Length: 445
Image (cartoon, rainbow, N blue to C red; front, side, top):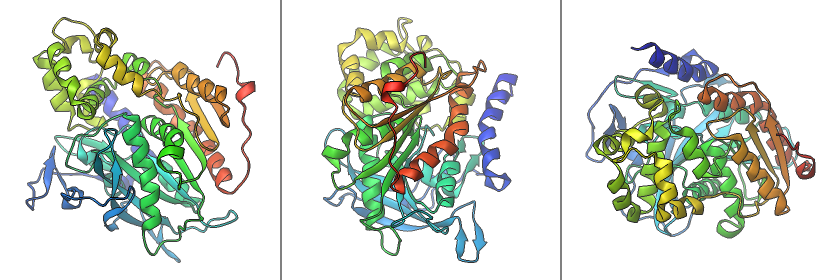
Protein backbone atom coordinates (compact mmCIF):
# COMPACT_ATOMS: atom_id res chain seq x y z
CA UNK A 1 0.00 0.00 0.00
CA UNK A 2 1.46 3.42 -0.97
CA UNK A 3 2.61 5.71 1.87
CA UNK A 4 -0.10 8.28 1.10
CA UNK A 5 -2.83 5.65 1.38
CA UNK A 6 -1.36 4.36 4.65
CA UNK A 7 -1.51 7.90 6.07
CA UNK A 8 -5.10 8.33 4.96
CA UNK A 9 -6.17 5.01 6.43
CA UNK A 10 -4.40 5.93 9.66
CA UNK A 11 -6.36 9.19 9.82
CA UNK A 12 -9.62 7.29 9.47
CA UNK A 13 -8.63 4.85 12.19
CA UNK A 14 -7.91 7.73 14.58
CA UNK A 15 -11.67 7.99 15.01
CA UNK A 16 -11.90 4.37 16.04
CA UNK A 17 -9.38 4.94 18.82
CA UNK A 18 -11.95 7.22 20.43
CA UNK A 19 -14.42 4.34 20.52
CA UNK A 20 -12.21 1.70 22.08
CA UNK A 21 -10.49 -1.41 20.84
CA UNK A 22 -13.67 -3.46 21.11
CA UNK A 23 -15.11 -1.45 18.20
CA UNK A 24 -13.25 -3.53 15.62
CA UNK A 25 -15.29 -5.91 13.51
CA UNK A 26 -13.66 -7.63 10.56
CA UNK A 27 -16.25 -8.29 7.87
CA UNK A 28 -15.84 -10.91 5.17
CA UNK A 29 -17.53 -11.09 1.83
CA UNK A 30 -20.70 -13.11 1.91
CA UNK A 31 -23.60 -13.87 -0.36
CA UNK A 32 -27.15 -12.79 0.36
CA UNK A 33 -29.00 -15.28 2.53
CA UNK A 34 -32.49 -14.27 1.41
CA UNK A 35 -34.02 -12.99 -1.78
CA UNK A 36 -34.67 -9.55 -0.29
CA UNK A 37 -31.16 -9.05 1.08
CA UNK A 38 -28.48 -7.30 -0.94
CA UNK A 39 -24.71 -7.31 -0.71
CA UNK A 40 -22.82 -4.02 -0.87
CA UNK A 41 -19.04 -4.34 -1.21
CA UNK A 42 -18.97 -7.68 0.55
CA UNK A 43 -21.34 -6.65 3.35
CA UNK A 44 -24.77 -8.26 3.54
CA UNK A 45 -27.47 -5.66 4.17
CA UNK A 46 -30.11 -7.25 6.43
CA UNK A 47 -33.56 -7.79 4.97
CA UNK A 48 -34.87 -5.27 7.51
CA UNK A 49 -33.53 -2.47 5.29
CA UNK A 50 -35.58 -3.48 2.26
CA UNK A 51 -38.65 -1.17 2.25
CA UNK A 52 -42.14 -2.53 1.58
CA UNK A 53 -44.04 -1.58 -1.57
CA UNK A 54 -46.56 0.49 0.39
CA UNK A 55 -45.76 2.96 3.16
CA UNK A 56 -47.98 4.51 5.85
CA UNK A 57 -49.58 7.86 5.07
CA UNK A 58 -48.28 9.83 8.05
CA UNK A 59 -44.78 11.28 8.10
CA UNK A 60 -42.77 9.70 10.90
CA UNK A 61 -45.02 6.65 11.10
CA UNK A 62 -43.17 3.45 11.98
CA UNK A 63 -42.91 0.90 9.20
CA UNK A 64 -41.10 -1.68 11.31
CA UNK A 65 -38.71 -2.02 14.24
CA UNK A 66 -36.52 -4.68 15.83
CA UNK A 67 -33.92 -4.94 18.61
CA UNK A 68 -30.50 -3.61 17.61
CA UNK A 69 -27.43 -5.07 19.35
CA UNK A 70 -24.90 -2.39 20.29
CA UNK A 71 -21.31 -3.40 19.67
CA UNK A 72 -20.07 -1.21 22.53
CA UNK A 73 -22.14 -2.16 25.56
CA UNK A 74 -21.59 -3.42 29.09
CA UNK A 75 -23.84 -5.04 31.68
CA UNK A 76 -24.87 -2.67 34.48
CA UNK A 77 -26.88 -2.79 37.67
CA UNK A 78 -29.85 -1.12 36.01
CA UNK A 79 -29.54 -2.76 32.60
CA UNK A 80 -27.20 -2.69 29.65
CA UNK A 81 -24.90 0.32 29.40
CA UNK A 82 -25.20 2.77 27.74
CA UNK A 83 -28.72 1.72 26.82
CA UNK A 84 -31.04 -0.46 24.78
CA UNK A 85 -31.24 0.09 21.03
CA UNK A 86 -34.02 -0.44 18.51
CA UNK A 87 -33.57 -0.45 14.76
CA UNK A 88 -36.20 1.65 12.97
CA UNK A 89 -37.78 2.11 9.58
CA UNK A 90 -40.16 5.04 9.24
CA UNK A 91 -41.97 6.98 6.55
CA UNK A 92 -40.82 10.39 5.34
CA UNK A 93 -41.35 12.62 2.30
CA UNK A 94 -38.57 13.46 -0.13
CA UNK A 95 -37.82 16.75 -1.88
CA UNK A 96 -40.10 15.79 -4.77
CA UNK A 97 -43.05 15.29 -2.41
CA UNK A 98 -42.91 11.49 -2.73
CA UNK A 99 -43.16 9.00 0.16
CA UNK A 100 -39.88 7.39 1.14
CA UNK A 101 -38.74 4.85 3.72
CA UNK A 102 -35.92 5.95 6.03
CA UNK A 103 -34.04 3.77 8.51
CA UNK A 104 -32.31 4.65 11.75
CA UNK A 105 -32.07 3.69 15.41
CA UNK A 106 -33.45 4.70 18.79
CA UNK A 107 -31.44 4.21 21.98
CA UNK A 108 -33.09 4.27 25.40
CA UNK A 109 -30.38 5.35 27.87
CA UNK A 110 -29.59 3.48 31.07
CA UNK A 111 -28.48 6.70 32.76
CA UNK A 112 -31.00 8.90 34.51
CA UNK A 113 -31.73 12.36 33.16
CA UNK A 114 -30.36 14.80 35.73
CA UNK A 115 -32.21 17.83 34.43
CA UNK A 116 -35.67 18.97 35.35
CA UNK A 117 -38.73 17.64 33.57
CA UNK A 118 -39.14 14.54 31.43
CA UNK A 119 -36.29 12.75 29.71
CA UNK A 120 -35.34 14.69 26.56
CA UNK A 121 -34.82 13.32 23.05
CA UNK A 122 -32.04 14.32 20.66
CA UNK A 123 -32.09 13.48 16.97
CA UNK A 124 -28.52 12.91 15.76
CA UNK A 125 -27.86 13.65 12.10
CA UNK A 126 -24.66 11.81 11.11
CA UNK A 127 -21.72 13.42 9.41
CA UNK A 128 -20.53 12.13 6.05
CA UNK A 129 -20.23 8.35 6.09
CA UNK A 130 -20.48 7.59 2.37
CA UNK A 131 -23.14 6.47 -0.08
CA UNK A 132 -23.14 2.69 0.25
CA UNK A 133 -25.92 1.18 2.34
CA UNK A 134 -23.33 -0.58 4.50
CA UNK A 135 -22.10 2.84 5.68
CA UNK A 136 -25.32 3.79 7.48
CA UNK A 137 -25.17 5.06 11.06
CA UNK A 138 -27.60 2.45 12.38
CA UNK A 139 -25.34 -0.32 11.08
CA UNK A 140 -22.41 1.55 12.56
CA UNK A 141 -23.89 1.13 16.04
CA UNK A 142 -23.81 -2.62 15.55
CA UNK A 143 -20.49 -2.71 13.67
CA UNK A 144 -18.46 0.47 14.41
CA UNK A 145 -15.68 -0.62 12.09
CA UNK A 146 -16.22 -2.77 9.03
CA UNK A 147 -12.98 -3.62 7.28
CA UNK A 148 -12.70 -6.08 4.42
CA UNK A 149 -11.03 -6.19 1.04
CA UNK A 150 -13.83 -4.10 -0.47
CA UNK A 151 -14.94 -1.51 2.08
CA UNK A 152 -13.86 0.45 5.16
CA UNK A 153 -16.75 1.83 7.21
CA UNK A 154 -16.15 3.78 10.44
CA UNK A 155 -19.06 4.54 12.79
CA UNK A 156 -17.43 7.66 14.20
CA UNK A 157 -20.78 9.20 15.11
CA UNK A 158 -21.06 6.63 17.90
CA UNK A 159 -18.90 8.89 20.07
CA UNK A 160 -21.40 11.77 20.14
CA UNK A 161 -24.31 9.34 20.56
CA UNK A 162 -22.69 7.70 23.59
CA UNK A 163 -21.86 11.06 25.15
CA UNK A 164 -25.50 12.10 24.89
CA UNK A 165 -26.64 8.77 26.36
CA UNK A 166 -24.28 9.27 29.29
CA UNK A 167 -26.17 12.48 30.06
CA UNK A 168 -29.42 10.53 30.28
CA UNK A 169 -30.65 11.85 26.93
CA UNK A 170 -32.59 9.50 24.65
CA UNK A 171 -31.17 9.45 21.13
CA UNK A 172 -32.66 8.75 17.73
CA UNK A 173 -30.26 8.67 14.79
CA UNK A 174 -31.35 8.84 11.15
CA UNK A 175 -29.68 7.08 8.25
CA UNK A 176 -31.07 9.70 5.83
CA UNK A 177 -32.94 9.03 2.61
CA UNK A 178 -31.40 6.17 0.63
CA UNK A 179 -28.63 5.33 3.08
CA UNK A 180 -29.36 1.96 4.64
CA UNK A 181 -32.74 1.55 2.94
CA UNK A 182 -31.94 -0.34 -0.24
CA UNK A 183 -34.55 1.01 -2.67
CA UNK A 184 -32.71 4.11 -3.88
CA UNK A 185 -29.42 6.00 -3.82
CA UNK A 186 -28.61 8.28 -0.90
CA UNK A 187 -29.43 11.89 -1.77
CA UNK A 188 -26.27 13.25 -0.19
CA UNK A 189 -26.52 16.90 1.06
CA UNK A 190 -30.07 17.36 -0.23
CA UNK A 191 -31.26 19.78 2.46
CA UNK A 192 -34.96 18.94 2.20
CA UNK A 193 -34.49 15.16 2.24
CA UNK A 194 -32.13 15.44 5.21
CA UNK A 195 -34.30 17.87 7.16
CA UNK A 196 -37.40 15.73 6.69
CA UNK A 197 -35.51 12.58 7.70
CA UNK A 198 -34.30 14.26 10.92
CA UNK A 199 -37.70 15.64 11.91
CA UNK A 200 -39.52 12.42 11.07
CA UNK A 201 -37.00 10.47 13.16
CA UNK A 202 -38.28 12.42 16.17
CA UNK A 203 -41.84 11.48 15.31
CA UNK A 204 -40.86 7.82 14.88
CA UNK A 205 -39.06 7.75 18.25
CA UNK A 206 -42.10 9.24 19.97
CA UNK A 207 -44.33 6.50 18.56
CA UNK A 208 -42.25 3.63 19.96
CA UNK A 209 -43.83 1.80 22.87
CA UNK A 210 -42.04 0.96 26.11
CA UNK A 211 -39.73 4.00 26.12
CA UNK A 212 -39.38 6.91 28.52
CA UNK A 213 -39.89 9.50 25.77
CA UNK A 214 -43.24 11.24 25.80
CA UNK A 215 -44.92 14.03 23.87
CA UNK A 216 -43.71 16.36 26.64
CA UNK A 217 -40.03 15.41 26.18
CA UNK A 218 -37.89 18.37 25.07
CA UNK A 219 -36.37 17.82 21.63
CA UNK A 220 -32.91 18.78 20.42
CA UNK A 221 -30.98 18.28 17.18
CA UNK A 222 -27.28 17.46 16.91
CA UNK A 223 -25.14 17.28 13.79
CA UNK A 224 -21.68 18.04 12.41
CA UNK A 225 -20.58 18.41 8.75
CA UNK A 226 -23.26 16.74 6.62
CA UNK A 227 -25.13 16.37 9.91
CA UNK A 228 -24.70 20.08 10.65
CA UNK A 229 -26.30 20.91 7.32
CA UNK A 230 -29.12 18.47 8.06
CA UNK A 231 -29.89 19.92 11.50
CA UNK A 232 -29.60 23.48 10.20
CA UNK A 233 -32.06 22.69 7.42
CA UNK A 234 -34.35 20.88 9.87
CA UNK A 235 -34.43 23.93 12.16
CA UNK A 236 -35.38 26.05 9.14
CA UNK A 237 -38.16 23.70 7.96
CA UNK A 238 -39.56 22.69 11.36
CA UNK A 239 -42.32 25.30 11.44
CA UNK A 240 -43.68 24.34 8.02
CA UNK A 241 -42.99 20.60 7.89
CA UNK A 242 -43.20 19.46 11.52
CA UNK A 243 -45.01 22.03 13.70
CA UNK A 244 -45.65 19.22 16.20
CA UNK A 245 -41.91 18.92 16.85
CA UNK A 246 -40.96 21.91 19.02
CA UNK A 247 -37.20 22.40 19.13
CA UNK A 248 -35.50 23.29 22.41
CA UNK A 249 -32.12 23.66 20.72
CA UNK A 250 -30.16 22.79 17.59
CA UNK A 251 -26.43 22.24 17.23
CA UNK A 252 -25.16 22.71 13.67
CA UNK A 253 -21.43 22.10 13.40
CA UNK A 254 -19.50 22.94 10.20
CA UNK A 255 -22.66 23.00 8.06
CA UNK A 256 -22.28 22.85 4.26
CA UNK A 257 -24.73 25.72 3.78
CA UNK A 258 -23.50 26.87 0.36
CA UNK A 259 -22.84 23.87 -1.90
CA UNK A 260 -21.29 26.03 -4.61
CA UNK A 261 -18.51 26.94 -2.20
CA UNK A 262 -18.22 23.45 -0.74
CA UNK A 263 -18.06 21.79 -4.18
CA UNK A 264 -15.02 23.90 -5.06
CA UNK A 265 -13.34 23.12 -1.74
CA UNK A 266 -13.63 19.33 -1.82
CA UNK A 267 -12.42 19.01 -5.42
CA UNK A 268 -8.84 17.72 -5.24
CA UNK A 269 -8.92 17.26 -1.45
CA UNK A 270 -8.49 14.08 0.59
CA UNK A 271 -12.28 13.70 0.48
CA UNK A 272 -12.67 14.36 -3.24
CA UNK A 273 -14.91 11.31 -3.36
CA UNK A 274 -17.64 13.41 -1.71
CA UNK A 275 -17.89 15.29 -5.00
CA UNK A 276 -19.07 12.05 -6.60
CA UNK A 277 -21.57 11.46 -3.79
CA UNK A 278 -22.89 14.97 -4.30
CA UNK A 279 -23.35 14.49 -8.04
CA UNK A 280 -24.99 11.11 -7.52
CA UNK A 281 -27.34 12.67 -5.00
CA UNK A 282 -28.20 15.56 -7.33
CA UNK A 283 -29.07 13.13 -10.13
CA UNK A 284 -31.14 10.95 -7.79
CA UNK A 285 -33.10 14.02 -6.67
CA UNK A 286 -33.57 15.50 -10.15
CA UNK A 287 -33.27 12.97 -12.99
CA UNK A 288 -33.67 15.82 -15.48
CA UNK A 289 -30.07 16.74 -14.70
CA UNK A 290 -28.77 13.35 -15.85
CA UNK A 291 -28.46 14.17 -19.59
CA UNK A 292 -26.57 17.35 -18.72
CA UNK A 293 -24.17 15.42 -16.51
CA UNK A 294 -23.63 12.67 -19.07
CA UNK A 295 -22.81 15.26 -21.72
CA UNK A 296 -19.89 16.52 -19.62
CA UNK A 297 -18.59 13.32 -17.99
CA UNK A 298 -16.07 11.11 -19.75
CA UNK A 299 -15.83 7.35 -19.22
CA UNK A 300 -13.58 7.80 -16.17
CA UNK A 301 -16.05 10.22 -14.59
CA UNK A 302 -19.02 7.95 -15.18
CA UNK A 303 -17.11 4.98 -13.78
CA UNK A 304 -16.10 7.01 -10.72
CA UNK A 305 -19.70 7.95 -9.94
CA UNK A 306 -20.78 4.32 -10.20
CA UNK A 307 -17.87 3.18 -8.05
CA UNK A 308 -18.43 5.86 -5.40
CA UNK A 309 -22.16 5.11 -5.16
CA UNK A 310 -21.40 2.05 -3.01
CA UNK A 311 -18.41 3.46 -1.11
CA UNK A 312 -17.92 4.56 2.51
CA UNK A 313 -15.55 7.32 3.66
CA UNK A 314 -12.66 4.89 4.18
CA UNK A 315 -13.02 3.54 0.65
CA UNK A 316 -13.13 7.03 -0.84
CA UNK A 317 -10.03 8.10 1.09
CA UNK A 318 -8.09 5.14 -0.26
CA UNK A 319 -9.44 5.28 -3.81
CA UNK A 320 -10.12 8.92 -4.64
CA UNK A 321 -8.06 11.14 -2.34
CA UNK A 322 -6.70 14.26 -4.09
CA UNK A 323 -8.53 13.34 -7.30
CA UNK A 324 -9.33 16.39 -9.43
CA UNK A 325 -12.64 16.47 -11.24
CA UNK A 326 -10.94 17.78 -14.39
CA UNK A 327 -9.96 14.14 -15.03
CA UNK A 328 -13.66 13.20 -15.07
CA UNK A 329 -14.86 15.61 -17.74
CA UNK A 330 -14.82 15.52 -21.51
CA UNK A 331 -13.25 18.96 -21.92
CA UNK A 332 -11.05 19.18 -18.82
CA UNK A 333 -13.32 21.63 -17.01
CA UNK A 334 -13.83 21.19 -13.29
CA UNK A 335 -17.22 20.18 -11.96
CA UNK A 336 -17.49 23.63 -10.35
CA UNK A 337 -16.90 25.31 -13.71
CA UNK A 338 -19.55 23.14 -15.35
CA UNK A 339 -22.05 23.93 -12.58
CA UNK A 340 -21.37 27.65 -12.89
CA UNK A 341 -21.94 27.58 -16.66
CA UNK A 342 -25.04 25.35 -16.56
CA UNK A 343 -28.14 27.20 -15.30
CA UNK A 344 -30.02 24.02 -14.38
CA UNK A 345 -27.16 22.81 -12.18
CA UNK A 346 -26.64 26.21 -10.58
CA UNK A 347 -30.37 26.56 -9.94
CA UNK A 348 -30.40 23.17 -8.22
CA UNK A 349 -27.50 24.17 -5.95
CA UNK A 350 -29.10 27.53 -5.22
CA UNK A 351 -32.22 25.67 -4.05
CA UNK A 352 -30.05 23.73 -1.61
CA UNK A 353 -28.79 26.93 0.04
CA UNK A 354 -29.32 26.98 3.82
CA UNK A 355 -29.80 30.40 5.36
CA UNK A 356 -32.77 31.74 3.43
CA UNK A 357 -35.21 30.89 6.26
CA UNK A 358 -35.25 31.72 9.97
CA UNK A 359 -34.55 28.65 12.12
CA UNK A 360 -36.90 27.65 14.93
CA UNK A 361 -35.58 27.80 18.48
CA UNK A 362 -32.05 28.58 19.63
CA UNK A 363 -29.20 27.40 17.42
CA UNK A 364 -25.51 26.91 18.20
CA UNK A 365 -23.42 27.13 15.05
CA UNK A 366 -19.75 26.18 15.33
CA UNK A 367 -17.12 26.13 12.63
CA UNK A 368 -13.34 25.73 12.65
CA UNK A 369 -11.61 28.90 11.48
CA UNK A 370 -9.05 26.76 9.63
CA UNK A 371 -11.64 24.49 8.03
CA UNK A 372 -10.96 24.53 4.30
CA UNK A 373 -12.90 21.36 3.44
CA UNK A 374 -16.34 22.65 4.44
CA UNK A 375 -15.12 26.24 4.27
CA UNK A 376 -15.33 28.32 7.42
CA UNK A 377 -16.45 31.45 5.55
CA UNK A 378 -19.64 29.94 4.15
CA UNK A 379 -20.56 28.41 7.54
CA UNK A 380 -20.01 31.74 9.29
CA UNK A 381 -22.11 33.42 6.61
CA UNK A 382 -24.96 31.14 7.62
CA UNK A 383 -24.75 32.54 11.15
CA UNK A 384 -24.77 36.07 9.72
CA UNK A 385 -27.78 35.29 7.53
CA UNK A 386 -29.70 33.81 10.46
CA UNK A 387 -28.85 36.72 12.71
CA UNK A 388 -30.18 39.13 10.09
CA UNK A 389 -33.49 37.27 10.27
CA UNK A 390 -33.70 37.73 14.06
CA UNK A 391 -32.79 34.15 14.96
CA UNK A 392 -31.42 33.15 18.36
CA UNK A 393 -27.88 32.19 17.31
CA UNK A 394 -24.87 31.28 19.41
CA UNK A 395 -21.94 31.42 17.00
CA UNK A 396 -18.72 29.64 18.02
CA UNK A 397 -15.53 29.98 15.97
CA UNK A 398 -13.30 27.02 16.85
CA UNK A 399 -9.79 28.45 16.74
CA UNK A 400 -7.25 25.79 15.82
CA UNK A 401 -4.10 26.08 13.72
CA UNK A 402 -4.13 24.79 10.17
CA UNK A 403 -2.27 21.48 9.97
CA UNK A 404 -1.96 21.36 6.20
CA UNK A 405 -4.60 18.65 5.80
CA UNK A 406 -8.09 19.76 4.77
CA UNK A 407 -9.56 16.56 6.24
CA UNK A 408 -7.94 17.11 9.65
CA UNK A 409 -8.73 20.83 9.61
CA UNK A 410 -12.36 19.80 9.22
CA UNK A 411 -12.35 16.86 11.61
CA UNK A 412 -10.40 18.36 14.53
CA UNK A 413 -13.12 20.87 15.54
CA UNK A 414 -15.64 18.02 15.77
CA UNK A 415 -13.63 16.49 18.61
CA UNK A 416 -12.39 19.65 20.34
CA UNK A 417 -15.80 21.33 20.39
CA UNK A 418 -17.97 18.27 20.98
CA UNK A 419 -18.06 18.52 24.77
CA UNK A 420 -19.07 22.18 24.70
CA UNK A 421 -21.65 21.49 22.00
CA UNK A 422 -23.29 18.73 24.02
CA UNK A 423 -23.22 20.86 27.17
CA UNK A 424 -24.90 23.73 25.32
CA UNK A 425 -27.55 21.39 23.96
CA UNK A 426 -28.28 19.70 27.30
CA UNK A 427 -28.63 23.15 28.90
CA UNK A 428 -31.34 23.97 26.36
CA UNK A 429 -33.04 20.62 27.02
CA UNK A 430 -33.01 21.41 30.73
CA UNK A 431 -34.85 24.65 30.07
CA UNK A 432 -31.95 27.07 30.55
CA UNK A 433 -32.17 30.03 28.16
CA UNK A 434 -29.59 30.59 25.45
CA UNK A 435 -27.73 33.86 25.02
CA UNK A 436 -27.42 34.95 21.40
CA UNK A 437 -24.14 36.56 20.40
CA UNK A 438 -25.34 37.76 17.01
CA UNK A 439 -24.26 41.32 17.57
CA UNK A 440 -20.93 40.56 19.18
CA UNK A 441 -19.53 38.08 16.66
CA UNK A 442 -15.85 38.77 15.98
CA UNK A 443 -15.55 40.52 12.64
CA UNK A 444 -12.42 38.60 11.65
CA UNK A 445 -13.77 35.17 12.58
